[in-house]
Length: 178
Image (cartoon, rainbow, N blue to C red):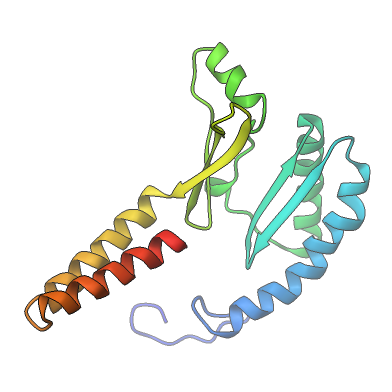
């Protein structure tokens, strides 16, 4: 629908349609998932990992040259299957055991990235070894707090205080469990 008028589309499914995620999953499984597993990973010198949820993808490589080669081959793969990449969401960054130390040595801060509403960053365990840490992204946390505030405003005069606090605790606990 554009400007109140319904127009039939020749390509794709409407955004938000119930069929869109299913078709995306089926199509991208063959086009990207199996391709990464059977072709890309075999040619890597180091470790390589692939994470996909619907149309969001995270590719991790031990070697910087493997990552660059992957980006180039992904471009060819996208053209071959008429896929588009959101350039504003695409990043190529150093992340891992040595990225934090190298960033601090050069006077900067280790890079972080957001994937599926979580911000991932380099950290250390209490024993001093490297670990990947995560927290709710600022954008999602702001949205969640705004929804929580609206819920409290709507229900503060409708529920007894004890019930309101129990339900509020359940909502906060659900967020923390996620």
